[in-house]
Image (cartoon, rainbow, N blue to C red):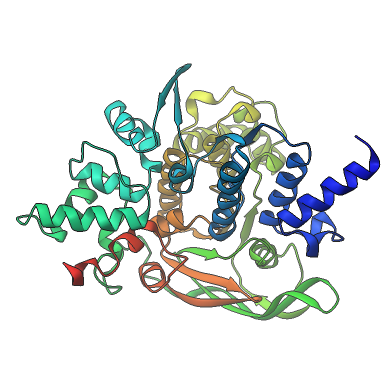
Length: 438
């Protein structure tokens, strides 16, 4: 390809993908969604007939993930590009897909987006939990035909179903969903925001950490955190949400003492332990067991104490069967549990988790969430930064949105999500206003 042709194609792709304003920026300064668009534009420069994408939205917030998938759909419709992608976020992918391939034990089953739910339900496949809420709602009500995939389709299906089954109330449907798909926390968001979330918190709701008017930035005159003020309740699972680049990870590192506030202060007597987004960053040994034993030996623990502690921890995180496996050979969920186990050996009072569900499928997310609840039951306060709305809705006790350098709308989780429009689980959008309409 000649230089003039390369320049012409580059300009064409930059125009098409709306990258003109970013053209001279350093890629390190871009948000996650912008980086993905740049990579997609670079791939399209060679005018491929087939694009193969491996979980392209796993590190994007809900808004950027939606925009990215919309771009893929546009490329497919306007240029006929065949797109093959693996993805955990089925609620965004299934509505734009033509075919779905389900892999299990080395076999591949070909089906359609509106029929895959039936297949997963019949197989008792853990991927069932990742289906769009509209599809799971229809399946819970005995739908045998094509399934709704979007919130709009789900609302239409729900209204038609209630008209055809006058003996069934909306409350009955909620009970069915809660029983057959317990990962959909309908009862917390159905009707009004005053329904109490099951309380796994300790009664002690005193403040364990206070960030007072904290400011921090990487460049002079461009603060990432701006007069950041926050009180962390003891015994909570506190989820901080926000878009890519909003400063969520920076806030965690300031709370952990990794970054020193440029203004303001963090007030706490509690011991904080921070876990980065990539759990591999905390591994240094050749087996799961050695990760724990060597850590304890370096801290001066005696052999008998080390053996007892490691056995207890392996049972607690359910990793006994893989104790001799290399940490890098674990599944994503097992890696997360091992990293958290290693962090718990430091006996923290506050555990700070940076995007712990990144790259995990629905079944592993559920296991991780239950594991976090077990940790809180031992007296540890957990702070999670994440853009995984469904996970936060299921497991958080408290939530807030990080915007413009500060926390906005801090509230109990059920109230937080019930009052939101975009940052809210699909079940809230599906059932919103349906009680009044019914």
